[in-house]
Amino acid sequence: MKQLLLLLCLLPGLSQAQKVLTLAECVDLLSKNNLTYRAGNLQAEAAQAQLRQTKSQIFPQINIGANHSLNLGRSIDQYTNAYIDELYNYNSIGAGFQMPIFQGFKIQNQIRQNQLLKESAMENRTAVLNAQTILLLQGYVNVLATKSLYESYVQQVESSLQQVDRVEKQLNAGVAAQSTLFEIKAQLANDKFDMVTALNNYKTARLALFQRMNIEPDDSIDFAALDPIDMPADSKNAEAVYQDALKQFPEIKAAELSRKSFTYLVKSIKADNYPSLTLGANIGAFYASTNRNLDYFNQLNATRNGSLSLGLNIPIMGRWVTRPRIELAKVQERQSQNQFDIAKQLLRQSVELAVLDVNSTADRFAAAQGQSESLTASFSVVESKLNAGTANIFEYALAKANLGKAQANAIQARYEYMMKQRLLQFYRQGTWIGIY
Image (cartoon, rainbow, N blue to C red; front, side, top):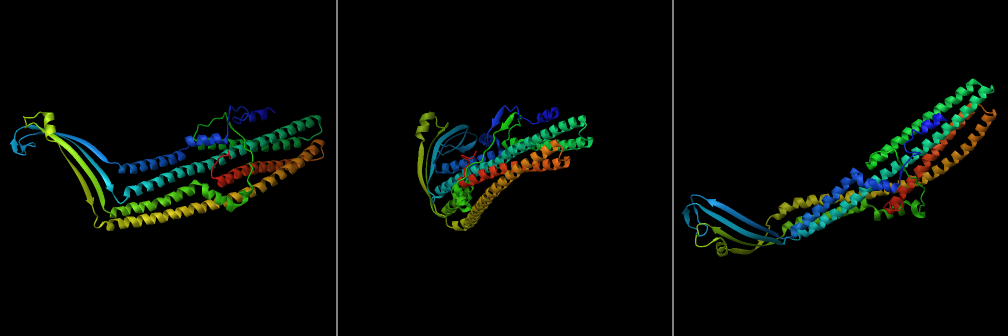
């Protein structure tokens, strides 16, 4: 028993866990720390910034400027426009205003395009989080499964230790052979090897989960258990699940929004073929030191000037320039349509596989449970016969090995079924709400 207690101490956080994380809390940590999801956030922020930049083009441009110069030698007096040859100062100030009146709705279409691209980036951000959450779910379930497998092997070691203790007593009493003790100790060694292997698998699964969340591994953290969830009646209908997923999945929304954005890209390019109107205005004044009759401010007041302009630009051969750009945009639109079709195809295939997996893992789980229950009963009979001396060690080792395999199958099938249930429910509703 001392050896068993020593091996139990090797399991991090199993008996002295200070904190228990639920799946929902792990997803929250994932959304805060995962670098892949952070990249999706940055792409969404870039799309938002691009939209703001495009909107800024509709605002008028206002500028204020000032200039000061020191003139030497022969130059033109800015006040009298006469040639002079002396050292004098010149200072000017002014303000300008310019605003596009009509550009063939170019900016408006660019704004609509970037609005759709921003919404697509937001949906892509959600899609990235969903993909990372699926990987997190697989890692989380793997931690629970490997932990259960380890605990199962610990029980097998404990059972073998009890048999070793019993045979040693029989050997001391002269009712058991030395070979029987060697054989039962060999079985104990095999069980310990399986237990250590399971422990290493559990540690590896924990490390992978911490790395997925991008947090420091902590042996004091344990993870909450999961229970099977109730599945709606139509969850086994792949077509019904697919139709629900089409309305909810961010990958589909993102691809559709991206496809629609190219319609406005083409319109904004075509706008370069239309006449454009621009309204402009400016006002200014200057001071020249050659005019000694007026001081600085009076001279500025005397030289103030301004203008108001309306500019018309009519492209003559603009279509020769825009035609290749329009052709490229239309090719990109067809590429986006193809990406949209690919997204729908991948979603349909994923849903069909998820429905099949839930049905098959449900049957596998039921079969594994039945197998485990039968072999548990069979092993109890063989163990009783061994204790009574009516069964040999080989029958015991075979029954124990079969039981261990059946228990491992049942554990793996149980957690696989719970994971597939949650994955199918996610495809059905498009979010993780109520699934954690």
